[in-house]
Image (tube, rainbow, N blue to C red; front, side, top):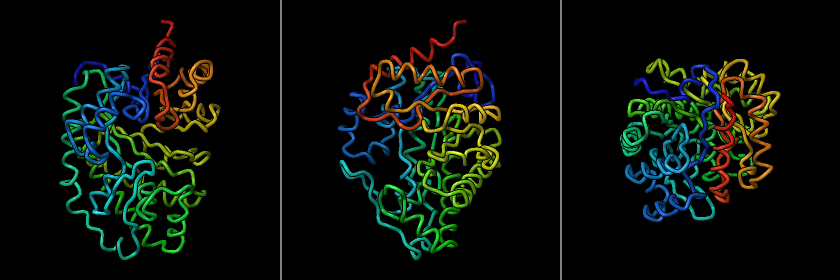
Length: 345
């Protein structure tokens, strides 16, 4: 690696960096006018994900505008079911749709051509790394098996993922097979991203918060631990962030149980609990995205609270979930300035 500092990687190694490195989940997205132009050019959301040139462009847009310490590959967690021929499509104003999978469909899944289907994603990773400033960390990512499975079972997002929970109770062995299948394919996908130029990767378990304690261990922890062990066995230096949104007290042992180098925290995680988690290793988060929409005092106070409690330990400043389309880009400018002004030295 070059002598240029990549601050986010230093934090992943356990260092405290002041001011902390910053990036935002969904930093390339609909709140930016330049993104909306690129999206129009692509024709569809999936075409945008599979166009290396346009995926590179939208990944770089927030870096040009804000100078974040990390860029995250522009893609989607549902490219995996798309590669598994589940007829994924994105309906304007309604979100993702795909053919719901049943027991027979799970038994028939074939992962042979997944990585070749996802070649354009790896091309985008290489293109982004070549185009980024040397000091900017490039993050790859994928969805966690539980979260991807919820969409595959229901064929869409649902408020509390009842279809997947019910399927897991009724067909436990088949569901565990699906989670292990997704874990293995997703691990291959992350290794391919690392080989293409990603400096670190993040696993998004966006629906971890709907699970009870036992189900969290079975459906969220075990598959992610399987993925991380697989990636690290093949790429021992790999750095992995795990983000289990809404997991609450289940985060207490999540780092140790999964083998993640850093854990992402959503905005509902109390800062006192976040400080306890930080004693065991680096944390990432956890500003409420609505504070970015509100701006002004709400934004300033939210940033200050996080920096006061977590800023003296290994921290990557981020939101507690993705930035929303209604966020004002100028509020993000103020956010970055305030975080970076936190170091008096």
